[in-house]
Image 1 (cartoon, rainbow, N blue to C red):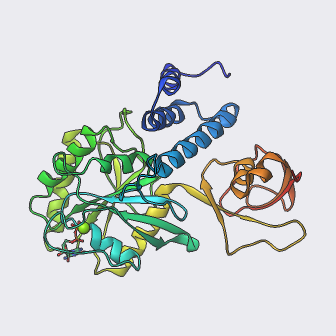
Image 2 (cartoon, rainbow, N blue to C red):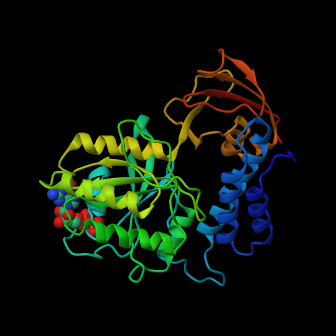
Image 3 (tube, rainbow, N blue to C red):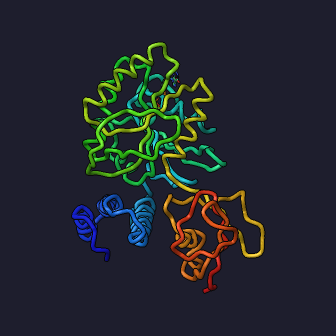
Length: 346
Ligand SMILES: Nc1nc2c(ncn2[C@@H]2O[C@H](COP(=O)(O)OP(=O)(O)O)[C@@H](O)[C@H]2O)c(=O)[nH]1
Ligand SMILES: [Mg+2]
């Protein structure tokens, strides 16, 4: 074991060892991943932690309730290249955004709490990747159903939708943030999409479940949107909320919706890689999507566990390699790479 692991890491690992339920396990693993020093010497450990996170998530999603009980209505089958929860105060325009970004037709109403169950819909983003958006009921300490926090613990990313046409935007934002703080779900600062702004705030490391969050200032077509944005900025900084990227949209402005589509893909911080069966053309229409930092061995396991187990070497075509360069299992993939994987058949 590398000698330079921090006390934070050791604490998180200890919590992971002691954890009895999947929620605790997941939180501890996420803390381990956050605390582990990011360099070549720990790449294998990082990969192990990521694989364990994926496994615990699977367990949490697939727990069907023993004894033939039906699985709860709020459990969502994960689909596509990543999942983004569309969260925020009541009436902030969440369902309208999901409708505009996808082909779904969620219920849109000008009264609060009209969305009562999580509602998934697929969004097409950069390079044709499909991202799963999940429309949610509002975040509210007293009114939110207990399962809502569970969805945050297993998601990949969150869009926090704040309504720039709302005179009570500050009160409503504080109520939503109070919910996240109460549930220990304060977000982290993600990879920042090009052209997005920022809500400046605190960079202090936080306890809790880290997931990348993009703030979406909605209904920016409102005449007084700019004024309310200024108030929001001041309040955000004074409250010591975490620094987060910000993007402004209106459902009436197609360009703003396109920017949001790409931003949601970027905060997921994934890469697309393509495979090429030996001696044949690459399959460019069907990318594999993996977290940034994944290795060619991670890809092999994604293709099939037997390909992972039997991995020998791969040939890579990409930005960081010369054509058909031979790479070993620890090769870190780059967006757009094409891989030809050679494995012993089992
Ligand atoms: N002006 C304007 N109104 C919007 C926009 N997006 C949503 N709305 C309106 O805001 C209200 C609440 O929308 P809805 O999507 O149901 O909010 P939710 O409760 O957060 O899901 C509806 O009356 C929408 O028509 C927008 O971009 N501009
Ligand atoms: Mg709604």
